[in-house]
Length: 509
Image (cartoon, rainbow, N blue to C red):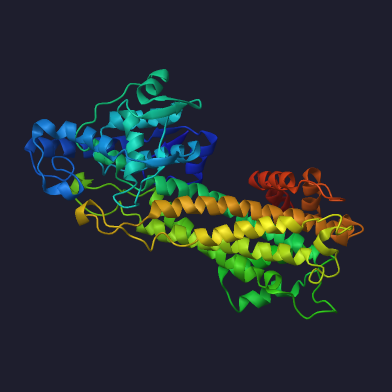
C-alpha cells in the first residue's frame, strides 16, 4: 500500500501503481489539508465572493458571473463540455498512472476538493475502475483538460469505464465495484481536470523504460565490441577525466569494466589505429543521453509532487490565487529533450548493426553474418528494420513544444503541446526497444562466428549474456524468420534479466 501525501510520491511508485496494481491510501495529514482547503471554498461560497471557477465561467468566460443557484450545475457542465477527447483510448497503465498522479496532486490541499470526492477516486483506482480516456485532445496548457474530463465523468456516474477489461457505462462500472457516483460541488469539477497528470503519466512510464534501454544499450555495445574486435583504450577513465561529463564517464566505466577481461577486445589493434565513431565515441553519445535522462528525471520527479490546479487555495494565508501552474511547458521541453536523447541511442545502435553486417567493415566476418551468402540473406534485412525505426524516430523527435495554437478567444494564447510530446516519446521508446533488440541478436551472431570457445574468449559477464540470448535466439545456420527472434529479444530486455545478469557479475550503472 502506497501512502499518498502529495509530497513524496516517486516516479517508481507511480509505475508500481500503473503496472503492478499497487493500492494507495491517503495519509492522515493529507486528509486534513484537503478538508482545510475545502472549508476555504465553502467560506468563499457562503460570502458570495467572486472567485474564478467557483462562481465564474471558464477561459474566456472568466468574467461571467454565475449565480449561487447555478454553481453546482457549473461544475457538471464543465466536465461534460470538456470531455471532447478523440483517438484511441489510453492504455490501462497510463490511465492508472494518471489517476494516482491526480490523487497525489489533490492531496496537497490546494485544490478545494471534498474528501469524499477524492476518496471515490482512490476507491476507483484500488478496485480497478478504469475510465476510458481518449488519448488526443490535450494542448498541455490549462492542464490535460479533455482526457481528465473523461476521467471525471466516471465519478459522476457518466462516461465509460473498464472493469476487468470489460467496457461499460461509468454508472455500471461503479456499481459493479460497490461504489456510488458523486454530485460535484463547487470548484470540484475544475479541481479534477486542471492539471498535467496525463502528460506526467506518460513521462513516468517512459522514464522507467528509458533507463532500462539506456543500460541495455551499453550491454549491447559491449557484445558488439567483441563481435567486431573493437579497441578498448578509448574507454579508459583517463580519457574521460579530462572531459568530465558525468554520463560519459559512467558509460565508459560500464564498458571498460564489462570488457576488460575479454580476449576479443584489445588496448590497440595491429591493423588499425582507431575504431569508427559508433564504437569509439559511444561513451560520448550514450553518456550525453544519460545526462539528458537525469535532467528529465529531476523535472518529472518535481512535477509528480506539484500542485497544478487553478486557482490555487492557500488556507493558512486565506488567499486564492489564479496562476499558471497547469501550463505544461516544463514537461513539454524536457520530454522533447528526452525524445532526442533516446533517438540518438537508436541512431548509433543501427550504425553498429550496419558495421557488423558489412564484410569490409567487420574485421573479416562473412557478409551479413551468413556462411552461404546469396542462397541466404542472413541478417541483411534486420538492418533494414532498424534503419526504418531510426528514420521514424528522427521524424518523431521534431519538437512539439515549439508549437502553440491560441485557444479560448485568445485568453489561452500560448499552449505547450506537452501532451503531444509525451505521446511521441512513448512511440520512440517502443521503437528503441526493437532497435536494441536487433543489435543484441546481430552481435550474438557476430560473436558466434568470431569465436571458437566463447567461454574462454568473451568477458565473464558478456559470456553469460551471450548464453542467455542463445536460449531464445539460436545461431542462424540458414535463413529463418527473424521477426520472432527480435520479439523474443525485446521481451528479454523488458524483463531486465540480462541487466540483472550483468549487475550480479560486476558494478554496472
